Amino acid sequence: MVVLRLKRKGRKKRPIYHVVAADKRRAAQGRIIEDLGRFDNLNVPNKLELNEDRVIHWLQKGAKPSDTVRSILKNEGILYKMHLLRWGKSEEEIEEALAEWHEKRGDKVDGEQSQKDKQKALLEAEEKEYKKQLEKKAAEEARRREQAEAEAKLEAEKKAKEEAEAEAAEKAKAEEEENEEAEAESKQEEKAEAETDDSSDDEEEEKKES
Image (cartoon, rainbow, N blue to C red):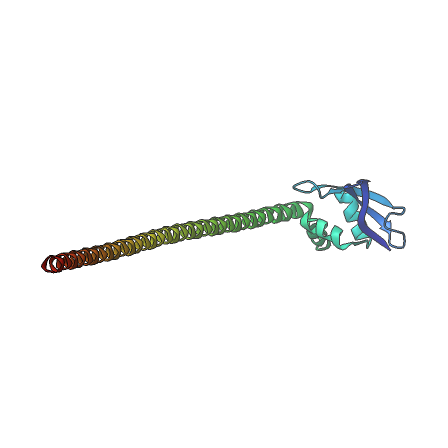
């Protein structure tokens, strides 16, 4: 059985595929019956060169395309052209039908692209909003942190002030107590001296009388 498949060519990391007609029993890289075109899927859009008449020739002879080749032929409208030929359409009818098919497919591709653009724009908008929310959250966290630091600083200053006032009050109280003790001692000394003086006067008077 003849199959239409891709045969890998090109160099390492830069393949290019040949669309070939080959015997199914032979290896994928083995001998081919006919080279039908080229397919380069590394380009954007993909680059495709096909001998359409020979592809249709092999399809009419019963050749079976691989899944990849079938997808390529479907996207190019060749399978649709095969159906039109089987239905016995004239060349003019086929050309008209293919032109309409390509137009509809172009509108579909444009619509899909437009939808992709909308989805991309939506994702970009969502990402932008997400980043905006992250920035807002970070700003709020920074504001709360600054506020907490300011409150902690005020609390520390208040505590330091209270401690300083308490220390000053305690020191003033201690000084006042020391002054009171010193005054009391001074009064006691004066009293003791006065009593000593009175006692000396009495003794002198007694001596005079005797």
